[in-house]
Length: 114
Image (cartoon, rainbow, N blue to C red; front, side):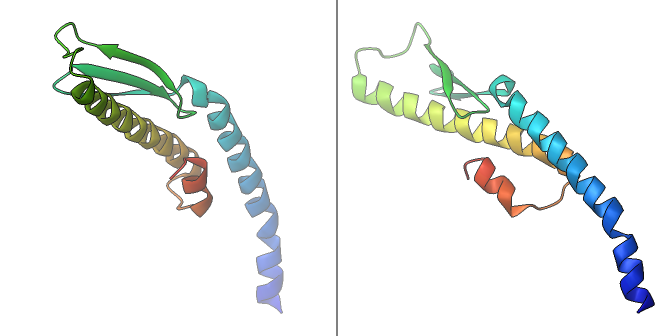
């Protein structure tokens, strides 16, 4: 019986911690548009920047990029986009881990689009 009472006494601080963590996660979510990462391919021929909403913000091509070889350019662009998305997901995951103190929350993967 005393063990149950002891467990109940710990419920309040646990709920407060959960509310604090939820607030911090909401703060991170509000910063998602400002989290940015880049990806490159072709030795820097194509550079892509994505934000924490997994939106592509920019695609730039080096002056030496093979603009007439559309198939190669499409492959390089796709590779750079995929790299940018992976990089921004890693940055977002780090932000979330900082908030949760490294707790493994399954919901995070869904929030990160993984």
